[in-house]
Amino acid sequence: MTALAAPHAADALVLRHDADGVATLTLNRPRVYNALSTGLMTALQGELDAIRDDRGVRAVILAGAGNGFCAGHDLKELRANPSRDFATALFRQCAELMLAIVRLPQPVIARVHGSAAAAGCQLVATCDLAVAAASAGFAVNGVSIGLFCSTPMVALTRNIGRKAAMKMLLADERVDAETARRYGLVNDVVPDAELDAATAALAAKIASRSPLVVKIGKEAFHRQAEMELAAAYAYTAEVMATNMMARDAAEGIDAFLAKRPPRWCGA
Image (cartoon, rainbow, N blue to C red; front, side):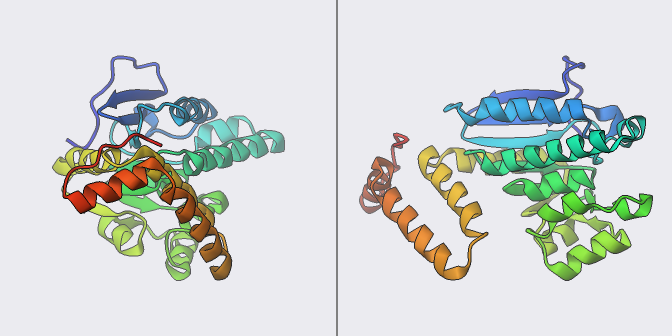
């Protein structure tokens, strides 16, 4: 089932469900395709802040309630507040939210069904991994309504090639799930009925790894990506040397050599 079931707490803008080391955060404005209002972004930021230091959470799934993942910013809210100050505050809030996902120690997996448009596509691009239903679609379509997707462009161009990104941004090219996978925007495309199981399986695989090592690796991945080549190698050599001193590295290597499952201690 692609669309998540309607929750009992209908007034909660973000729903959280924890199971087996995985926290699922569900955007919960289904009537407006989970448009990112200031309230929804505040609620999601609060959940991410709570998860950051929760040692029981080893991976996060980000999903959308109803018939789509996320339609982007709430355009009615923007038009109801036409001042420059409001727009500046809203887009800064969105940028901080995206940075919070990148900086979260736990990997975040987007579970995408229906449409992921504009800032919704930005969310997918910002997440560390993404699994999409075969019927999902992606767009950064602000140019068609006179509002170029400048902030979504930041995440998009860190995922896919420039020519593909420019075509999506300038021509309002809406791409299907397979094209998104080919572009590098999503990792996997699965039949709609298998979306929940495929996303859960990926999250479970990550949750089975050493949380310390995953935290080290995620931070290093994002930091080295912004460095020039020599600096990236120098930085990651230091990261690996530090990682090698961790008890989980010793345990993982010993377990591999002994052909037994590792017993992570998180240190």
